[in-house]
Length: 315
Image 1 (cartoon, rainbow, N blue to C red):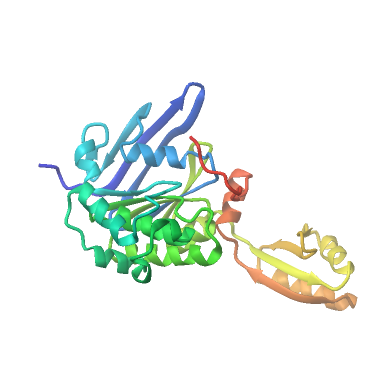
Image 2 (cartoon, helix red, strand yellow; image 1 turned 90 degrees about the vertical axis):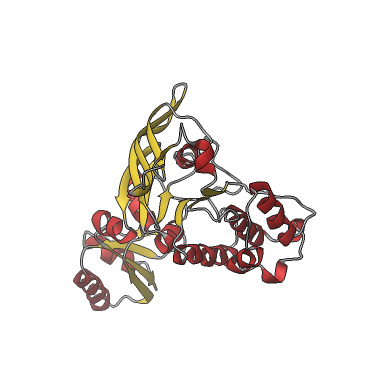
């Protein structure tokens, strides 16, 4: 009988090499039961490789990985019955309906599935009789999540579930993922969208070039690594930029000719505004906000989290 595990997933000093390429470089982390754990990083960072190792799909070079207390190298048959997977680039059968698709996978897993409940969970009730080929990208991803839940898994792996979706479809998928969180599922999410990680994740591991470089809740990561405010000004004339520059604050112009400045305290914002007013210069608007996970990632790695159209991770 398998001993009850403290964590859903335990990864200890995991390494994966392909010849001279070290795709995963001595990483360790634990995923608590019932949490949403996000791997945040750009394409090629090592996210998919790590996930496929945990899912028992891919062998590894060294280290130890357990899922629900089971060694992934020894208990593959037991593990696959207790996990659900939405792979990157998910696809299904063009000419069968949403309902038929879920019925097919239910028979494939040899499980009794609440098909109507799954359709309801992923908000596809109005599309139950629609063929897969006629679904939009967002609807296809929601069906993919439903397929990953056919066997009522304890741990669900979602690899870049919203890549390539328009903003509306992305938000609709997020609603589905928040529903999984409410149901108490353990969700392992890989993403390069900082907003996705901030909204959904209890714990975020930032991964770059095969190494985990920071880990914690989104709030912890921001407070620990980006303790400043971001001020954006829409100037009326060029004098504003020069005024801020002379204050020694290092302003930069963005692509819309707005002035962006990092400040340490709220009173620095007031000092800037007072200096602009005293000079007789003007601005059309301002925005002050705390940094986000993307800025944390940029600070830690020197590279931005950015989607390249049509690109997928190929590790």
